Image (cartoon, rainbow, N blue to C red; front, side, top):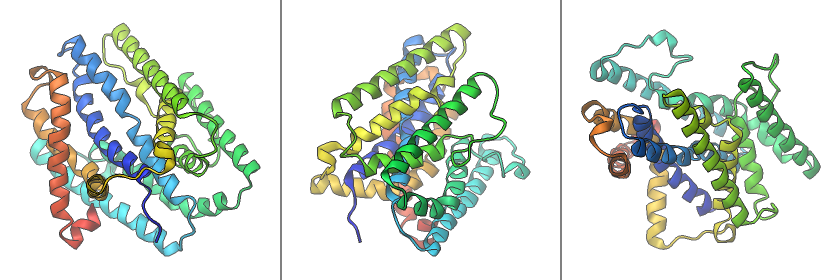
Length: 337
């Protein structure tokens, strides 16, 4: 059994914390007219920065899975795990919506509308896992020349889809392989970044600069759209925008090359990373319960963002980890989280 790559595990740990940050800062950003401008801009900057987490989750999947040769049965078990999690947590949030939030949900819509918005990630990953075994074969058998052409093709497809959307339209036919969404692009690009991480001719300093500059462009344009429209705008925070892609891709590249691509944590840090790594999927699934409770009783204007965001992130992450740790004491708990 191959040992863990702690560069990827560190990215995973940072990413699950950032996902919590996204949902907390969204609460503040969507209260644009009820909070001060400094609170809004602080929240928006953290929201934009934390957005690298979701692309990183997709890229981690690509880095870990696309280069493997696995039996079809293993793919079936992986797919079944996600389907089980989707069914169980959709039902839990359906009950939560009705009895806690007091809002109804038509279960007939479950094929295309998650019972809770953050469950969209499962809807995106399940189709990817369906085709993963075939792409493992594809990726393993490409020559380097074909790989370069493939990366150019999928990058162009994502850019064309984005430009078509900006123009208010959609391609008459989606480009095969990538489709009309950016998520599988991240899976594929994560595989190639990880495979060639030691050979990509971009220095660590340059990777950081590209990521930061792209982030600032995303943040600045979001502020401009918000102020000009007098309402919070998240159009530039979408994972398909070119600058969000650049921010995420070069952040990921920087992280997987830390310590010359062989990050080795201390024994204490390793235990922490391992513990949170095992719980990261469950934390993603459960953390919204705690955030919903906070949002119901505490308006965004009550606590400044610079206090609430870091404190809530730590508290919600801790509570979520504790719940998942308890769930993992049981076999059925490990199955659903």
